[in-house]
Every structure is written in structure tokens, then in C-alpha cells.
Length: 102
Image (cartoon, rainbow, N blue to C red; front, side, top):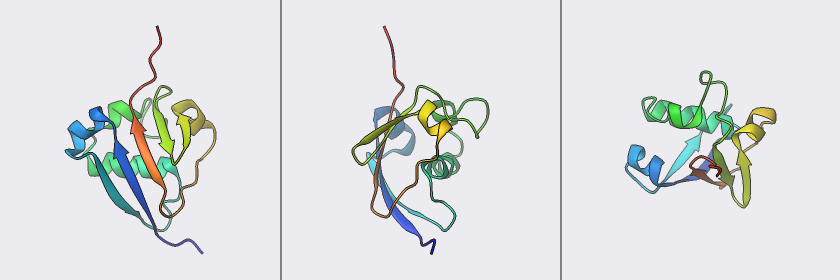
């Protein structure tokens, strides 16, 4: 059974500036089961304003430097492009800004 799921999204400052809030709760519909689905949904709800922060080479490819935390596990964009990350009901997803090196 592929039921709807409720997830909480926590935004780092760069994303807060776009969404105008520190966090939000989102109901994922049937068929929206992965972190990539969530990112696509957030792109739609922002009117594409976050696309340059999370995607490269079009909406199908997540930026390699993006970091996303799901509950206590951290994923990079590279990891997200290699394997889908399933979301569960009541997951907490934190959108972090890019990894930077020195």
C-alpha cells in the first residue's frame, strides 16, 4: 500500500529566504515516495526559485554539493543521484547549503 506521508522540512538560512519560514510540514501524495520527489515538489512550490540551489543539468540531476539530512542521516547530492532515498511518514528532512572546500 502506497499511502500519503507527512514529512517536516527544516530550511537552512538560504532556503528560509526563499520559503519565508524556518520549516514546514508537507503531505506527500501517493507516488511521491523519495527524497528526489520531495525536492521536485519543493521546486514547484517555490516557483522554481530553489532550482539553482538544488539541481544542475535540469531538474533530474541533483547538485553534487547539496547536503540533505533525513532524520539523523546525511546525504550529498552525489549520493542522491546514485540511489533513491525513500521517505517514511514523520521523517524530518533538513535542507542544508552546499558543501564547500578550502
